[in-house]
Amino acid sequence: EIVMTQSPATLSVSPGERATLSCRASQSVSSNLAWYQQKPGQAPRLLIYGASTRATGIPGRFSGSGSGTEFTLTISSLQSEDFAVYHCHQYNNWPITFGQGTRLEIK
Amino acid sequence: EVQLVESGGGLVQPGGSLRLSCSVSGFTFSSYVMHWVRQAPGKGLEHISAISSNGGSTFYADSVKGRFTISRDISKNTLYLQMSSLRAEDTAVYYCVKPLGRMIYDAFDIWGQGTMVTVSS
Image (cartoon, rainbow over all chains, first blue to last red):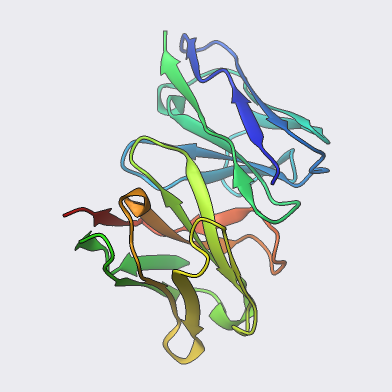
C-alpha cells in the first residue's frame, strides 16, 4: 500500500499570504495525484488532478506541482474561504490512498 | 447538474447490517466506475470500494473485504453498499463518489453529501 504523508498537520497563515502544503508518497505515483479541499460538515471538493491541473471552477490562486513522490499545493494569496482541511490522494495504484490531511488555519 | 444523493445511514448495533444507497443523476451512470469513500469522525478519508461500469468487477479495501458488498442497478441509476458484521471502527460518514473520467483509477470530481453510519450498542 502506498502511504501518503502530508505536512504540516496544521498550517497557520495570515489572509493574503501564501500557503504551501506538502504531500509525500512512499513510492512513485507518477502524476496521478489529486488535491481536495474540505470544509466542516461538507464533502471534499476536487481542486487539482494530474498533480497540476486545476479542476473546473477552481480559482487561479490554487496551483499544484510535483511528480513521483513529492507534491506541493500552493495557494498564492489566501482568502477567508480558503481556510479548510486539504487532502492529497494517489490514484496510481490499488489500494487508492489519501493523506491524513493538512488543516489550514487563520493566523 | 450532476448529483449524488446517499441514503440509508443510521445507528446500528455491532454485528448488525445496513444498506446504503446512492441515487445519481446528471450523467451516464452506466459509463463510470463508482466508488465509496468513508471518513471516521475527525479522521482522514479512506477509500473502501469500487465497482466497474458494468458491475462485473468489484474492489474492496482490506478493512471491509468479506463484510461489505458493492453493487449497482443501472436501471435505477443507483449505487449500493451492503454492510454486514459491522464494527465500532466502521463508524463514519460514507460518501458516494464519481471519478473525473472513465478509468478505474482517477481523481474524484463529484461527491455526495455523505450519510452517517454509527455502530454502537
